[in-house]
Image (cartoon, rainbow, N blue to C red; front, side, top):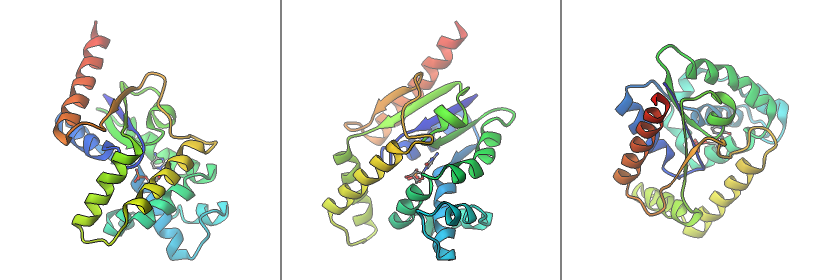
Length: 210
Ligand code: DC
């Protein structure tokens, strides 16, 4: 079974995707990490994220980078969003994701374009959302808990800018596949969101068997 989990930043998609992968025993790929690795490598190279050639050069990162906790930084997330706009970058990362999705036994991938581009043939497609305010609040609390000195307004502005860039790009924009099941986690606890995602997957699979 192939499961695609897409959605904007801080929607809860990463947490839900990991829980689903564990529940169904599926290999899991966080595709955002690949774009983050490109952003990280680009910064090492001293490149310009808005220049397609620099961004493409940064696609040649070593897999060790994927283990680096610095990939989780907000600044790297911003760079990832900027490099991911370039069709050259998306093409360079495409095969790795398509192969992962279509491995024997299936897989679960989370990202922005899994249900639309990487695995349009996925058995189940989920699109996880939450309001920008709720997502900013979650990110704010998570950063505060790590003693990071941040302001709520700055996080909200960053999330809104990232949404606009991810949804507005011409290649593989962030948008629900026509057959995606949308789950709005704005008013859900983590446990409720996971339960609702498992219920959605089970219902979709049961409906396909009929
Ligand atoms: O999911 P994330 O926050 O780790 O993703 C970082 C950025 O990478 C995101 O803002 C856009 C880009 N991305 C993408 O364009 N396509 C994907 N499948 C995953 C991430």
